[in-house]
Image (cartoon, rainbow, N blue to C red; front, side):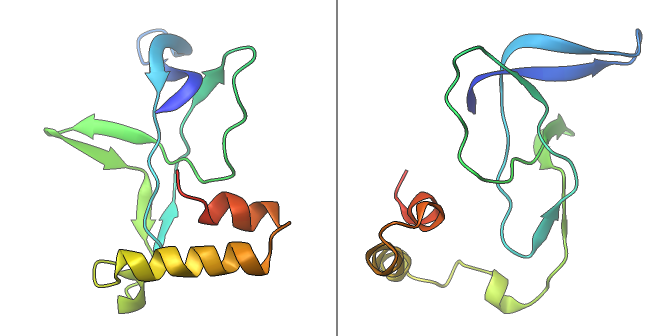
Length: 112
């Protein structure tokens, strides 16, 4: 969910874009994928700035959610299911220690 943002949608009957009352949403895709469509939203006044991430558009059809992305790398290194979470956490802490004033490292490595 994208706090402080309202979803936007296309009305095929009128041909116009409408701002909805619903909260905007987005997805994050796994490495090895490229986003092909970004989430559309309108930001409320005073909403916090979003972190520097790629926000993929989401759709719902055929009983499931779909993300606008294409798999572009088949390499097994892009599959993280076999990597231990504690190894990732240790690496994130090491990066934050090595680069204490790097805002991007802090943003990407910090726990949500």
